[in-house]
Image: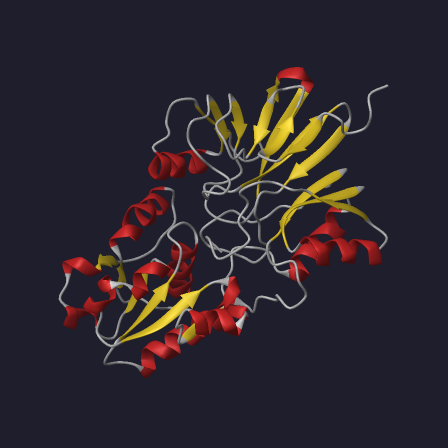
Length: 336
């Protein structure tokens, strides 16, 4: 008799669905890949076939110049793979197009979350709780110290800093996929109607979001305007740009950073951040444990992040869990 869940096998380069010979978010090129979202530690070019949401495929084409073999799968759509495996793409709430993948085979259900968050986000579809037998979760912020405040509070800090610095600008470091667009959309939701200035590296991704129905308001490129024009405005740029020569074109900037890691004061100090904004596109500790309780799987597999604390939580709550050792999964500053 076949052992339970022997058809899904964690390997160093990704999760292998053996009967279908398909990989989930593989770290190297394969014949067939199911991709949860467009960040570089989950998506890459070179696959023979890539199954992902239309939004993720568009992001991959923009970022990695992938087009051949792209096979779109909409939210709620089930595809039938070889070997009697079915895969359904479900919103993950991480960034535009991000998906959990429900795999069903031999009467067993496995959900692979990719990266996810539970907090509302106007730029992407919200996470959907999906009961399953095996729940494969990230744990980027899997320590009790990581509790993300309501984003309204952090956007309020940003707007106050702008009001308190009318003669300069506020330069926000934010990653180009997901974080930048979320900060802009939340500023608009809070009533900030003024133009927002962008580093050139942000423009194409912001336009892609708009093409997929995300309203970002008036955006201007910093390079198209004089230094004086930026006074009293918010500038969004890649984190690295705030410390290089490009930042000299900004008038008296107050440096901010939008990241879940801004909860750690030492990281903010190391990066010279004057205004830490705790804004994350990942689940915090409470969201991780809440989600696991709601999904109520037979066993949880942890792909990356702060594994030991989450394993201990499972032990204390008499739940089964194991940590996976996948290569190339980010648990540092990248895209958080």
